[in-house]
Image (cartoon, rainbow, N blue to C red):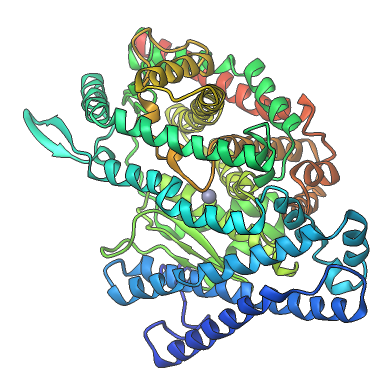
Length: 612
Ligand SMILES: [Zn+2]
């Protein structure tokens, strides 16, 4: 195959008519009408029982629902793709807003179905599920929906609460968005004070005083809104705790755990294994401090680049073709199925990678369930980083590919399982690059990036979890001031980072600057990340111990993410019990072996330098 077989632009035309055409408009209008009619029809659902007429109606209804859900996903994905590739186009923005108006219909359908399932007794439900194949194949989806219904208030209260939330909990979240969006930072650049938004101020300067100055400049800016953010945070979690009280939930972790289809024992086992094993990362900090020539790291040093050392050339340009070949090659090494998939996606126009202006920032992978295809959006910049991004997104696309023949409702997976395939794909490429690294410095850099990730998942996100957990416990007793929140955050950081940073090196106002605490629709936007990261590390570790047959086990695991609880998915495929430490220990072994390599390389490189 020649190089030109990897197009840098994607093909959207084969998926659907372009959004600006009249054919598309007709399709969309027709879809809107069908969805609205269907939503209306769910106001009058048949009983969940074995009555033949009821079962027949449910079968038709679920088929229609599946089809509409897939079409809604297709449409959303299509507009998302067109918008990302042409950020300025007003027509796409309008279409996106138009699609958003369909959300209430979809919510109405979900609510009506959950309430219908809630009304059935356990026995009735079980009998109903097995009364027809078309219902039975969606058994897991229906079971989850029925379980979610127990977190709902009575229907009339639910409706009132949802209406009030627009000016209540969601309004606090919007207030945060407005405050953080308009925040300005005064920062020194080339001897002049300039105004920047917080996102524009970086902490990756090779010069420590620049990192330190930037950190303090941003912190000063956040401190000006801390009191208002404390109000928002108090009321967001206050509203949640009130709702939990009304539905009879005593544990504030129950709802986020259910969202992620995992058990409390699993979460506890994961954190306690991390706590017992993360001490090894202090060794990484020691080595990195030596490389940076500092005594102890501070918060703003965590993202510091490695110093350039004699003989370290990092200017290698990586063409798109080379990156594609490298990815296919490393995936192929794991399994022919994975490699063939990557080749298909990269040659058949599934990827938009062109580096041009007018595109959105960032990267994503989105699925078109009806066509059983995905599309990947990114900007390829001839760097190793963007090659990793491409591998990450191809991992997501492979996940959807493996799930493509499952019923639509079993193609969905929760947040903690969403990053398994993508992080795994990155790990496959990363290990290959480590093996092929040409110099010690290149190897050191690769390990540094990998370990910086480990610090984020095992320490930074752990701190966020400890903070949020303790905050919820305190909030039950009353509101907290911004000073109290600072103390809570610094204590959480010291615990999570094992006191590894310098005495004045913490970031107590982190709770003000982190958007994740203010997402009103979802609490604890943290532990699923760590779960997903360690799950993919563990999968990688198990794969290393197994033979060629592991590729098939991996496929089965990916399929299980859509139709089983997290624990069952892992137990039935990898044979590990997530409520016990064994699996997590395996994941941590990968990290500790990387730390050992990093420390040895650091000592070797520094001793060579000193002997010059
Ligand atoms: Zn991802």
